[in-house]
Length: 146
Image 1 (cartoon, rainbow, N blue to C red):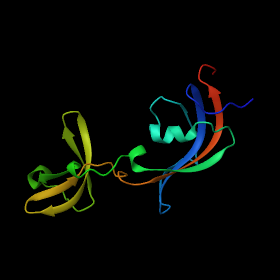
Image 2 (cartoon, rainbow, N blue to C red; image 1 turned 135 degrees about the horizontal axis):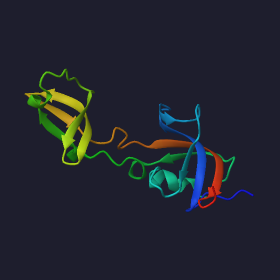
Image 3 (spheres, rainbow, N blue to C red; image 1 turned 135 degrees about the vertical axis):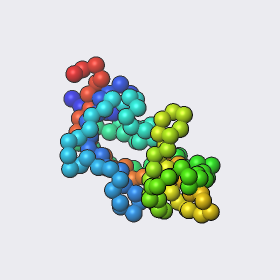
């Protein structure tokens, strides 16, 4: 007997994340399906909540708005970094670098180079974008049954 996806279930599914223009960001339709427990943090809550009530065999597509996906683009996350920080590195617009911060590494993308400074965008690359979330549910099981 199939049960619907709900808190306390383990879900096995194929999924794809696409931009609205159809560009694929991530997909496992060609490979092995992913298995995770609802609420374990493997899937952002905005994606997870679309799955509730789906059952094995269901296929669906959802458009997830930025505030439920990777957040809105925040201008305060665009910072000026002195070119001295790049030493002899070749830097160009669109290049991605990892910067050290107090908690580890923070990826940033160079958006502009001027006057001895580079403007670096530390927003998630998918911030501000609607994400198309395609799913095909393979199985749903109660969490405590393995």
